[in-house]
Image 1 (cartoon, rainbow, N blue to C red):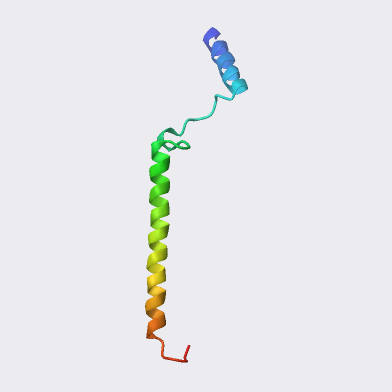
Image 2 (cartoon, helix red, strand yellow):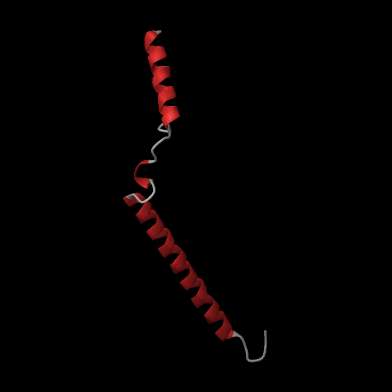
Length: 68
């Protein structure tokens, strides 16, 4: 029972100090995992845009002159 009270007291102190949040680990803001994740995401979006752009240009070349 005494340990339960000590644990509750410790929990209340952590909550009062704002240290009761879960640490997400290597994907925390500006950690190495964060940079890798965002670099891959930005590169993927860029490559997808290039692929869509080149596909659009190929389809526009196949259209006959003056037609839709």
